[in-house]
Image (cartoon, rainbow, N blue to C red; front, side, top):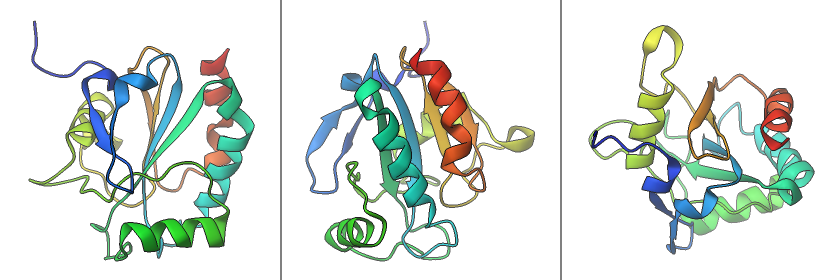
Length: 164
């Protein structure tokens, strides 16, 4: 028996407004977890994330978008500022999570598990930049890690397969 968390069920997180949510509620759904930033060259990916959300939310798909300021200080705002920016500039309707750290001593436990479950290129565990994405299957386990440069629309085929 291992102490290492096995599924998303082993975690909770905070919404942008501070409310704690049990991620065990996501079991049975396909979930995309992504660290985001409002002032990044990849910020337009919010549009693609929203499209995925609109296309698949009624079929059991969810997005957990975690703003993070660890890469070039590209997410300096408060939760309210980030939320307003995303809704106004990108039409985001999926819920935004609280701002977190994805690397280092203060990293969110969920991200420690994601990185261990799906290492990056050449086995690296650290998140290298904003908009790194993790796809989680209905059983709550990590299916795949995607690079920041992988556009959300490129994930549609993998999401479709998991929603079958």
